[in-house]
Structures are given as structure tokens and as C-alpha cells.
Image (cartoon, rainbow, N blue to C red; front, side):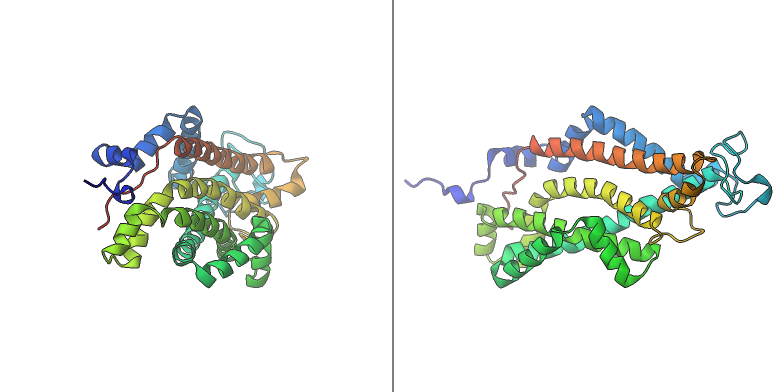
Amino acid sequence: MSAKPTSLAAPAPASRMVRGASPSARLVRRTLRNRGAQIGAVILLVLIAASLGAPLLTSHDPNAIDPTATLQPPSREHPMGTDHIGRDVLTRFLYGGQLSLRVGLIAIALGATIGVTLGLIAGYYGGWLDAASSWVTDVLLSFPDILLALAIIAVLGPGIVNAMLAIGIAFIPSFMRLTRGNVLAIREMGYVETARAIGTPDPQILIKHILPNALRTLLVLLTLGIGSAILAGAALSFLGLGAQPPTPEWGAMLNAGQKFIRQAWWLTLFPGLGIFLTVLAINLIGDALSDAVAGAAPAYSNKAT
């Protein structure tokens, strides 16, 4: 008698996951049991709902100028006051939230898509491609994300679209490096070897077997990255390199309000609070997700087809 080959056997936790709830559902439940994640989720949902519901929550035009209502403090008519040319700050705050959130989501989606794809290819095939991409990644990661984004936008020029592109490109090395590290470990697993042995095409192995098992740690980076991207977008707009006047955006509102910080505190308080609460909420969720991933059993697939 011969023993069963250990390289073909799936870990016990994986079998239980296949029979029970999906690993993703378990991960979500484990994350949402965290008190910090619950607080972060409530804050984030309120901010998203308020931003998306801007047309219902305010009747003002975010760019409408009223010379007779300049620098008015918060009141019943203008709950967050008005700016130096009479625009309603609440309206600009809500519409600015839409743009700030969109910048973070689009930038991270771009960085993750390209970075994960390159990381999968480099980690799976190895060789000179892996060596070259690792060297480039190490060089790029030696620069802070915001400095890399500044360098890119210096080439592309100012503007909100270019800011999103610059931030997304700046995040590519982080996603690529993490994905590559995961792939290097996963590609030696028994089910991957079995899939190769039975002639499964490489793209199918990468998408069906390797990528799902690398997603857990990538989700943590993805979540925390959204907060960092929102902060970077606000920083670029504050410097005049992102959203251009009169487009409402939290960073641009901070830039415009700093000139009147002594006489009109509300111009910087509310957009600054929006950035702070959004990034805080996302970080709380990201930290809880990280703890959930660390405490979860590996989600290794035992299917080779």
C-alpha cells in the first residue's frame, strides 16, 4: 500500500470552507464583528449617502455666486456658511465629497488592476521578467506615493483626471510587489502543480487558482489604499494640481479657505473634517479587515480543473 501523495491533498480548513460558507462571506462577517469596522462603516455610509444625495439635501448650485452673501457664518439658510464669493459651503461640501470619493476609487482601481496583473505575470513566470520588474518596483517604492504622484503630474499637467492617473500609477508598485510575493508562495502549492500536470492553461491557473488565494491580503491593501488615494487627491488639489476652480473638491476647498482662516473658520473646518472622517472610517475598516485576514485559515483551493 502506498500513502496518498501529500502534494495533492488540500488543507483541512479549505475543505471545510468549500462545504460551508464561502471564504469571502466568512471574511466579511469576521470583519464586521469588529467594533472599529462597525463605526467606520457607519461613518462611511453616512458620508457616501450624503454626497450621493446632494441634489436632495440642498437646492443650491455648488458654483452659484451671491455677492450679497459673502463669508456668512453657519446659519439656518446656510448650515455650513458661505465662502468669499457667496457660494453655499454645504452644497460644495456634498458635491466635493462625490469627487473626492471618486478620485480615491478610480485611482486605486487603476493601480490595483495594473499592479495585480503585472504581479501575477512576474511571480508566476519568474526569470528575467521577474528580476527586471522587481528592480523597477524597488526603485519606485523608494519614493513616497505623493512624491511619485507629483512627479507624474508634473509631466501630465494639472487637472483632476491627470491627478487620478498619477495617483493610480503611484500605487502600481505596491500592488505589484504584494501580488508577486503571494504568487511565489502559491505557485508551489499542490493544486497548482496538479493543474499544470493535467494541462490547464496558464491564464486559467492564474485567474481560477492563484488570484482567489491571493485576494485576502490584496483586499487589505485595496481598502487602506482608497483612504490614502483620497488623501493624496486632496493634497494635489490643495496644491493646485488636482481639481481646478470652480470645481468643488475637499482639497481645493481647503486651498481656497486658507486665505480666510482667521475670519471664516468654517471654510477650512468642514472640508478638512470630511477628509479626516472619510480616511478614518476607511482605515478603521482596513485595520479590522487586516485582523480578520490574519486570523483566517488559508483559503487554498483543492480543485485542479
